[in-house]
View 1 (spheres, helix red, strand yellow):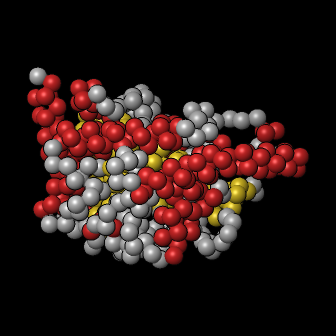
View 2 (cartoon, rainbow, N blue to C red):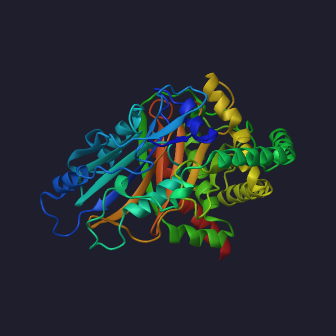
Length: 465
């Protein structure tokens, strides 16, 4: 049995795991049944997949110890896996609509994973209206990040609808590597440790300068650089409970990119702008809008294109959402200035310092959660908003066309709402997840993003004309 030690970033998701704040992430994929699908389509698929008893990483990784507050954690590769526990069939009362599906996903996502087993589940959901079905997968965040999940998705799906014999995702081998490089020698381990210590020592000056920059930005309201604790207190940043709400929205990437080009900004800036507009309206309607703008924590992938590892390879930046600005153009300009400053700050760091910088930036956030202060003190930032690129081709699963791929992320004490986007084909799928008690009527925020997009389009195109 082989083992792998978790990195500090991967292990941090275990340290903050609790009954109210399970640290798993998921994906909800919607499919159209292939034309002429037989009545036993699901039964045959379940039978075929249950017969696949070969498991590859990360699906066969189990924690060596279920004591989640340990200082160090290791993954052990496990082949003695009860597939019926992990792979399940559910059904909506036909015809199941988006609301019924959202209620089911919220309930499934509310339950913590079992750490005595590899921490993942897969639910096939039939009974969806318009001849569709869904697959919902959840995995612990210590096991995978969004970019890795998108790469696994690409390998598990087919580009040809006639390719109907692909094995399930857990039985697909990762990229082949030279076996001699899989097991490092003692000399390799010592050499690697020395090199790592040298890199960390050389990064101290850069980290010191970066920390000084963040401290100055935190105390200077006019500095567009987002910094920890520059966020106001809001109703989104209270203590939470285990029950969740889930909602979705789907937009054309072509539509969003056209708007970004017209406004001379990035696609991510547009995403932040419509989220900021939706949150401003939501909070203002409840007379809960802070005078200072909400800020967003934005994960940034630092994974090389040829890296097939499944752990977390992310950094973070913080940016304004312009919720203190009524005019949509001025709000977008404020966001653009903030994200530009954050990118310059992050790109000014050497690659060898990124992990240390990320732990430094997220240290206060993790400390709040570990100490029990999350949701009781000023938030490090108000909300996490992330945009994960995905496959640009249309994909198929046993001949069924995938029409949407919604992310289902996580929330924590002090972070009662999360908005994550997944790119797929020409769509950008928004997944909104929130604590059911902390953020009531959360579905309004999802609806308001569409209206904020229309408002921004009108303002930008009217200005351009």
